[in-house]
Length: 192
Image 1 (cartoon, rainbow, N blue to C red):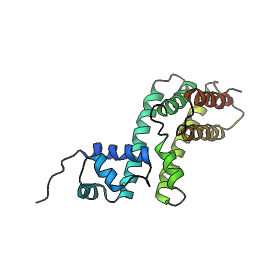
Image 2: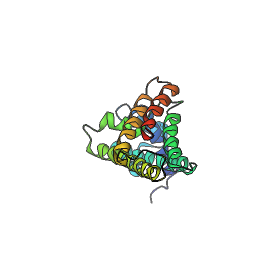
Image 3: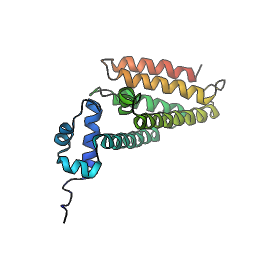
Image 4: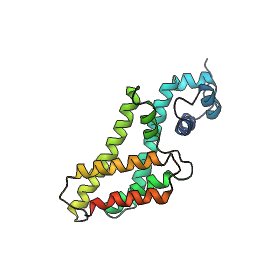
């Protein structure tokens, strides 16, 4: 008869996500994971598979975390303009204390050129945010908040590009003030 799990899977998965987010895939060893997750190596394999499978699950966990946070941030906005500002503010604030950047961006830059599964997960996450931005821009255009001389998808691509840059800069010593200036300048294209 097998032993029952002595850990909550979602909690240890979150711990793995945090470690991958902090160190990246290559720098995170199985020993690091076992120690940080507080489980035995056999439990890691039995529950999550190998390191790569665990990493993919950690990326999915991060995606759910980001979706929930963005949904919460956007729910506080009364207008499309405020919702987009909330997205930028969240990305800048989330970059603050730990300078971890974004796990999707970090993983894409570290692994996407040689790992199709990671590339697909990052690409999907980027497209979801781009679609969200396009929907908000269309809503703002219909409400007269934003310019209508550009297609919402083109504006969303530009804003997504800025958000990606902000998330990369978040890994450096760039100040929040600098990130906010970049965001403000980019958001101004919606109103010109």
